[in-house]
Length: 355
Image (cartoon, rainbow, N blue to C red):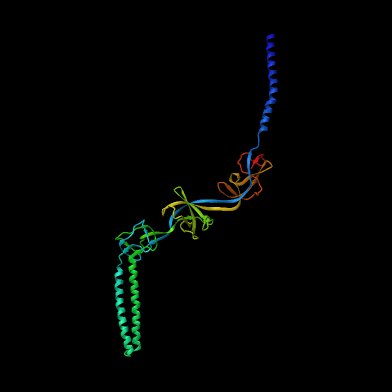
């Protein structure tokens, strides 16, 4: 019995010790937890004021490099090519012979010219005779006037024949009407050509242009003189808008735009390149950092900072780029906007704001 009693006493003593220890340790544990909660600090966020600035958006389009001036050469007559004086890639001067064409009408106009020359000579001789006879009173005034009119008609006919011959002769020799680079020359000796045959293309002018198509929305933001950027093989070139078509292309539904480029830019005619143009822009508007804007049910909102508290404010947002967003309404210039993104923000949340 005494052994059992001693065993029970030991158990009781151990239990009492455990209880005493628990009573002593529990406040410290609770105190530690309370201390942990007390040590939790509000998040630190950056605070900015709205600014006045510009936002510009760009669109990437595909353009084609062209010379500023292009002449497509066509013959005036049909015939066989008898000689070609130039080659593609060659620089030509205005008036330089490109090729010659056999002109079957040239001989007939030459004969007509010679015939009219004989007729004119006869009319002059007849007029001289009529003058002498009229002076001596041997012919009537009417006969004299008839001879005079015949000479005038012969003169006009001869001049017309000479003009026809010169034209036909000119049609036989094709020349460049402008100086520049012969971009193409698709003609060879013995080719049969006509007025619909494009013999060659000459690019002239001191500048190059890039031509591209744009939507109506984009061209509404464009003006003659605006700058753009052309990119080819990683290299960028600056251009200036020189032409904006006001007529839509019925096939594409787009508008043709041209911009001049630096003549020294090493861009081959006909090559394609990316063109970056302004597709939308606003000036002197209220802006805030784009990262400061949150969305709730499709509505834009920001958190403002006042007296170490965050306040939810819905705004009307406009266009934005990768840095800033336009604020149409909802804020004033004196508001302090929290620009740091944080999942701990909500209406009335405690925050530490830094500028």
